[in-house]
Image (tube, rainbow, N blue to C red):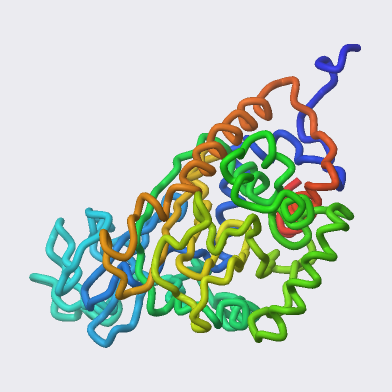
Length: 413
């Protein structure tokens, strides 16, 4: 029997190997994934500068759900399902805007920004407006970053979720920042392939020449996709890193890194690492691209990476930060949504050029789009079999184990 004649359907997963084909392709698996992510994870959606004034809103998609993120008159931020409580029409038809109240365009039911029903015409005398407020999901804000959770009951503790990132991001004035640019990279691949690509740097040297020209080669071997991404590689770099880390700790700038294993709820990690090659920030030429956003007042040549969960990531430099949302859209479709942050009082065209800030990661993410789409095309083939991971893919081996644990808890085979 040839290798292609062997049955492929739903083979067992083996630790240290890529996932079976159906987990990357099957519509039912995708639906289960999305439900698990929406209910069990806090999902990064944007920065609060996008809704700077009361009445400002934007909509965000989570699977088939549309969520209105809006600031009310007391400056509180809410996340409402974009569904009128009358007959279910969408309320906000634009992706963003500013309103004095939320009014359904179908029959003009009108809601306060905080979600209470304010006005409904010609209803029966016993009609109760209090029973028809907008359905909302959970919202949390940390360092200006907005997260949502769609659990129908109590959400996981947001304070616990973000606790370890407080010291990591304390030097960065992210609350006083603003979005300088944003871009969406639609990618024809399953969300897990997008995440796996982001969590390893085995591909960096052949696929990302520009990114590699910015970062130290030995650092990428040791920490290419963050702490825990390599297994026993880059020992010579670790001596260099230990010396740098010691000096940074003496200066009060270096919190301890961490990297969760597969038996944790969020699979979080964080580290502050030097960029290398004389770069004071992560830019094409290594020179500053915006005013400082750090409290210690120095272009320090380091970057802090925070993986809040596998689909919510932030990279913070001394002059700008980058938020990543890997938004699952379908079994074979993921939107890589990215926003770049700069100091709130920075002036576009004077203090920064959005294209210059975006340049390095735009090049890198377009390359990622190509290689991940090629990966999905191959995974969808009848010839695909799970392959073994290299020592530089340790983190995605752990991701596979983390995913399998959550998937099994959902009761699926």
